[in-house]
Amino acid sequence: MEIEAALLEIGRVDGRLKSSPARASWEFAMRMRGISQSCENAGVPVQPEDLGAWISRGGVPPRHAEGLNDDIGVAAIAFQLNELWKPGICCKRSVQPSRVDTFFGYRQMAFEYAGDDTRFYRDLAAKILEESHSTRRVETIADVAECCTKLLATYGLMLDQSLADHSAADGIVSARVRPVVWLVAACIPRLLQSAGLTENLHPNLVPSIRDRDCPAAEIETRIKDRIAVEGIASRRSLDEFERGIRKLTSVGATKRSRSQEAATVLCAMPQIRSNLLAQAIGSTPQGAGYIRRSMDM
Image (cartoon, rainbow, N blue to C red; front, top):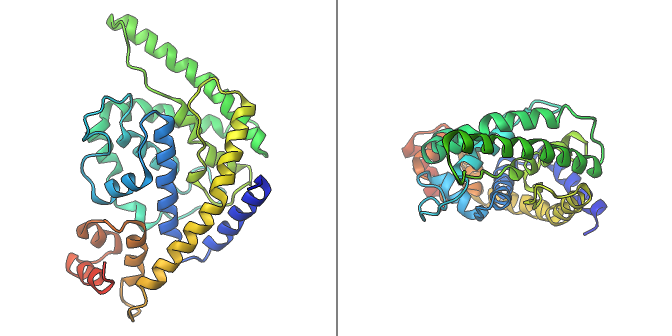
């Protein structure tokens, strides 16, 4: 798909999201796609479905249970991106966080399973996000790519220096290398929004970037490739979630029922535990169980 047509599809999605009952479900799914791509950029690939299943159930993160010796924990990436993409940060308008995102223990899971990584990236992420929005005004995809190149040059060098100092001070021959490219790439959806190319934040527009020395022209191409793929995929996902919610709420619920809220959560996370569903919709566990059974979930 041509980049203009893809941006037009994203624009149509932005327009529909203003009144779509599936907005929260769609946002959660797109966030999982963005986190999945960021994990791949960090060298710890995880499928969006596995991320969604983990977050909806809690417990041990993907890859951690497999005993893999990764340079960065998946829980740290999920937590940091949840903070980076939080509604209202560097946005033109204030957006209330969805119920789908308000009750999950990202912070608790991040510090429990990847505490060192979480502490390491927390301040670094704040600096990168602040600088990405303090540079000259971005108006085009080329501007976004140029901004990313500068961030990679600045923070890649800083990271190398900090690791070298740490190694020299502690007498460590081989220091642990924590990747930084994924964090810069994760700022791209915010930069596209700031440039006015998207009205809403689209976390699924994180492109595939793993090389710190990637030139601006290559980053621009990869951003365009990602937009071309995700443009139609975003619209199809919204169509699917809207159909799912209509189906789940066609059981004759009353106005006081929590069926609409339950359908939003269940469409995004069909494997969610019943106690978390109750928290999400503001109901008792018994009430949540009844609604779930009535929806044949």
